[in-house]
Length: 452
Image 1 (cartoon, helix red, strand yellow):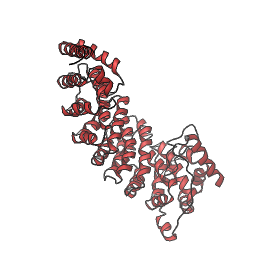
Image 2: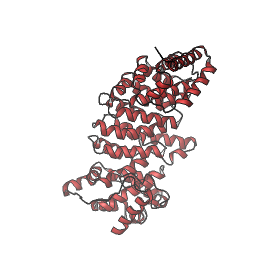
Image 3: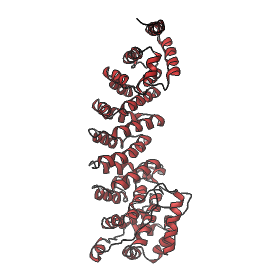
Image 4: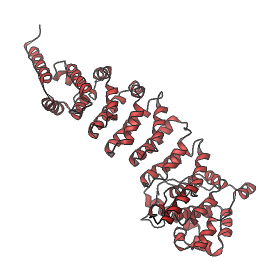
């Protein structure tokens, strides 16, 4: 026999469920609001007590209404928040299983792909997927087996809300950890995101790729091409993350292809040159071409990208490849980096690239005497004096003839280095990647000035 108190509690539960069953959209919205306010943060035992050991009866009604109405978006945000209270409650494994048994994961993923659904509703769907993924390895596998990586990645690329995109990044980061069966799938999905048109999605994908790369261990064949293409973006925050990833990739088997691609980027392609010429001949504005971003970050990555004007640092916190590893610097010399940098310095269509290439070449000249010898001969006394007096502002002072000298240079120090067995074991103190940008720039300049 149940007590009077228990009978009263059961009666209240049945009355509550009956009110829900008979309510329309507006009334159900009120019920959901009251439920969210009263039960946010409660544990599973507390929810059971609230519903007289019948919380699952309300959860099944929520999941049923979700499956019937998610395509219309009716009260979807409140509905997902209410389900989230059950799934995120402490000791809620029973609720989680009940939700998954009725196809909850597939429903959440389908919500992400529906155009009529509001961005805020999709954000709530992502948060529920986070809760599921954080519940354990088998749940991460379930999401991946439901084609979740593809759906989540596509949503990240299309989302217009940066806040929502950051929530997606949290989910992808969760899926890459503790998920050995499908970690490669997530890794490939992140690479596939790099060509997308959303700068924020590119930035977040690059950030997560750094983590994914360290977990996966091996590199995918397409990662070099995709990352190098990202360098052509006009968004500096994306360039910054790309450079950080490139620095990491220099420690993997793709390093030779990476260096070769970076050196190649210093010289404009035939297609780019023709496009610029056609714009000039047609009288169209070439403002976008004045600071072609593809060459600029390539020069920044290859060596010590820095600015003597401390208020204009370009990617100063990147621990650039050449200064980070002298062996890589020598590899670049074998790939013809000096010749390519001089060509970039003479490319008067891209002033920012000229500036950064000058600073990069200055590093090689001050580091390798053989480079200094060949560069000084190729430039001639007057141009070389201008270069050494102020490499950063050289592009402002040289004339068209001097620019042609740089573009037509035949410098090739690879043979000399090979014959002489040149090798530098000089150690550079680079500081922490999290060091203040201006402090890093000033310290690097002090080191160089101290040697002169």
